[in-house]
Length: 257
Image 1 (spheres, rainbow, N blue to C red):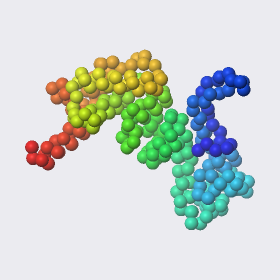
Image 2: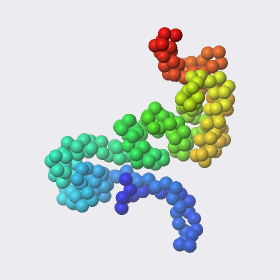
Image 3: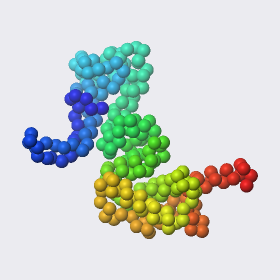
Image 4: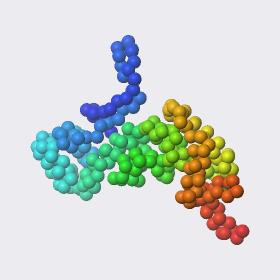
């Protein structure tokens, strides 16, 4: 999404070099186009099929940015889109600004272009609202494991003792115990220890402070909350993922045990 002429927000540290003071970039994020300006409309029109920088500029010069943007959403042939691409162009235009803003937001919190595209396909117009409210919802999408999402969330400013973070880690720990260890339950104390260790590990990798890191009581509180939400089942000190437990029961029923 970053082309020549794109406005960006660059973050990093200023360092001295033989060329003078320079910015050592840690992240570069494109700015969402402002469709109330010529430059913004020129930029966003280039997302339409067959529209490059030259055609986009010509459309804005001929019609003005307001009408050019209106034509992109209603009659794209007038700004250079081929007739056979009309329907595809209209479909893109209907969500163009929204998807661009969502993608810019996702890039700003550390996702790649490919990851951002997957997330937007999942949440559409609710992408920014969903991810900003609870980035751990992303763990429900294939390819977005807790460890990946947690690092992104922490770098985006999520607190280390956030309850959604702890809950996601508990569910991840039980799922990992099943898929990699063959266990559909963990002893409560063992679960708490593994969760705290995992939360600490991802925080260290994300280079965030562990001040106010969750303790035993914080994790146990969320375990009981998840149990009340029917996401966990607790019996005799053992903690099950309800989803895995139900799957196990169905297998037993199938084999007649």
